[in-house]
Length: 306
Image (cartoon, rainbow, N blue to C red; front, side, top):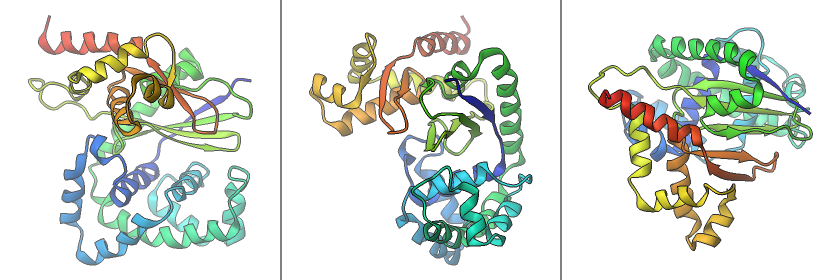
């Protein structure tokens, strides 16, 4: 059965994403902001704020599934402070009921712990980081979301998701009724998705406008980086026949998992691989993305002006 796609956009998602990247440092080596962003932010935060945020690094990563679900099912306001006030102002029962159908294994105790632990830290993060972000970020995200809404009517759910994420394929699957798709800046160039009962939340990266046309665009540099390694080229050739899982790649190519993961990540963020989502068990297969190869030619020819 086909699923429905909702294009959402809100600074609340960007608050959660930037906080996630800062406290967990997950994928930081693969993100455009890079480790230097962590250093830059820490230089702007007081020692008291840094100390207050530090414990979140050890909290369960799955807590963010709950936070993103609350954001997706927020009240009408899109403002960070209103979202945090909503979480703080609801009873434990109300807060749990808001998303319990999406997360059948969530308990009211866990829901309350997440609210009580994160809301004070997110208030600090909003005050000391988010409120100092350029307004351009919000404009880029809102403009891109509007573009995707227009394209959704023309392309349909599956093609729109593949286009927006540069390669994630979400085929209709039993129990999937809705995909909430939203743009993000801090997590670029990766995609992150959360699985729920009957629903998925998926984020896609939005590139900032290039300021200097003499410099190679970021999207072109991702291609050249991904293709600079002979082993990554070999992997790209290997998956051109049929989709392969990570385990199949490791076994058939005789490589360890960490090495293959890094190679797949580099090719994925360049848009050269498709990710086939195989249900809510988080299993994936990968195949070559022909559109990515075409985009490489387009970006290269555009930059060198031929």
